[in-house]
Amino acid sequence: MPDPTGDLIWMIDETRGTAATGVTGAPIPTQTQTTAAVLQTENIGDLRKRVRELSVTASAVHQNAYLEEWRVRTQERAALGGVSLLEALADLGFSWRDVARLLGVSVPAIQKWRKGGKLSPENRRKLASLLAACDFISMHFLVEDIGQWFEMPITDSAPITPIDLWADGNPVLVFEYATRHLTPDETMDKFDPSWRERYRTNVETFRDDDGILGLRIRE
Image 1: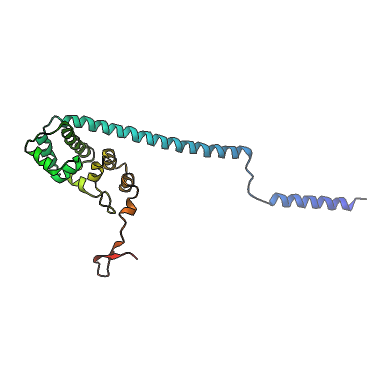
Image 2: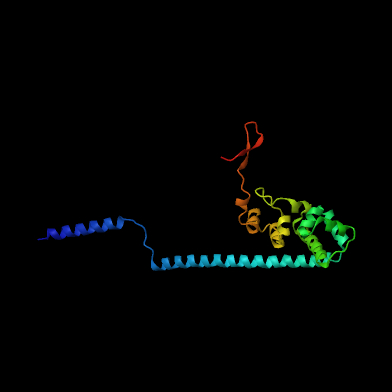
């Protein structure tokens, strides 16, 4: 006589098996998958590090390249006399006040040189290097009015110009800004990290209902 309990046990086991096969869930990653994911994360991290290091190296090499070009151009311009150097700067649109500031001398000194006064070798080289820098910027970036370019504020948020950078002894920063490898804000950050606070103002521009621009105090 068949054992009814045996049939019952078989039916329960079969039901459990069928139900179990119908359940779906998140796959459990194997050890191989986890290892591959870890390696991928580490490899990409190493790649980012190498790219960052390469960018720093490329920036340094590029800076050295245009500094070398500036040096060669300075030697070429140094063959000119003081009067010729000053006339060339005037032709580029520089005022004597700006030239004096860029060289760190007085306006009367510039006026004396214009009349053929004695020019020290150091100041002659300063004139030649400034003119050479203008040659470099104009040649590579097609700046038509280089004198005016030097006078233009780097950003609308501060009255700092390339003249300020050059007068402060930052020719590399001028070149980095001119070559557009630094944004205006990045240039200002390198020149004066506190410039945002220094030149912050409570005045803002606004446009009224008639479309006219005006000024008002920030709330």
